[in-house]
Amino acid sequence: MQNKITEIKTKAIEEISKAKNKEELFDLEKKYLGRKSEFNEILKNIKNLSEDEKREIGKLANISKIEIQDRINEIQKELEKNSFDWEKEKIDVTIPGKKVKNGHLHILSQVRNEIEDIFTSMGFGIADGPEVETEWYNFDALNVPKDHPARDMQDTFWLKEKSGEEKLALRTQTSTMQIRYMQKNKPPFRIIAPGKCFRREATDSTHEHTFYQFEALVAGEDINVGNLKYIAEEFFSRFFQKDVKVRLRPSYFPFTEPSFEFDINCLMCGGKGCRACKNVGWLELGGAGMVNQAVFEAAGYPGKGKPARNASHSDAGGYQGFAWGFGLERLAMMRYKINEVRLFHSGDLRFIDQF
Image 1 (tube, rainbow, N blue to C red):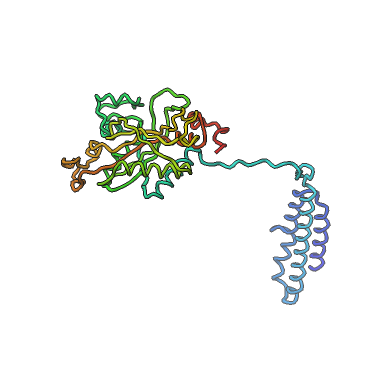
Image 2 (cartoon, rainbow, N blue to C red):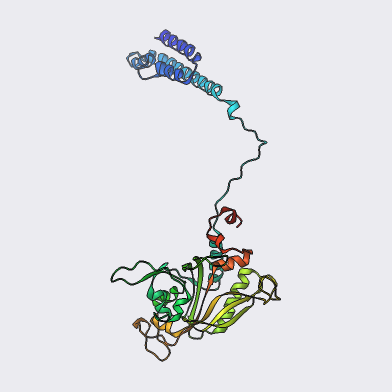
């Protein structure tokens, strides 16, 4: 049996050494070390030997098996080395590498995140609401009656009406969040509501049918125009990272009284007058004003000297507040000197990759 083991080992190592590829090597491994191999049959019969023969034959068999396996491993490494195409796989380390582009947030997302960070640091909460609104939230609750000419101030994307259901539209402003938030919360509070808005109008370098606004709403018992101006100056100074002055001009909006057009001093010339501000020293940003009492009443708060429509606010009385709505695109255009609003939604990577 010893001679048989030695003979098998010698023959196995000789044939394994001549293997030309991995397939041949696999077949030889199966032939000499496989479950049905002659070598394995010898190992099975060792149990029939005497104790002394078991020790002697078993030791020899294990050593031989290890030697065969070691030779298989050596030949396998040689075959792998020889089969590697060095010419094909070589790398020229002097060739400049290809720059891998990493994804990043869109400029409007970056601006929105920064605005939210500034206002949360000032103690404001952030509210969110649906982009598809009912006619009541988008117009009626904001003191814009059906026959009021103020409805003509903004063209609307109306959704197809279904019989018996309330009329729906894509919201034309984030002011709808004033009503939704006040229905569930009692003053005092301060919030902003950033979001997407839609208006059916012709597009040009400064107008777009889809745009972003951020609404601000502060309500309490002693809120006044001075609070509005102070908070606005504080925000814009932080956002533009320089001192910014605010100017309020009388205007009209159905949901505020008094209402103001909101201007800041020109950031290009510091208010001295230049081409960017048409030599007036001010840049218009949007609308603002003190919340109309009719809006408070629509949300369920009592007007001054009137009972509450919503029993949950029966203990409230005569609240005051201010609100504004500014465009995110307008702020980004001023900050980064962008002269074309349609670039924000164009999907042009040449523009997006700059920020």
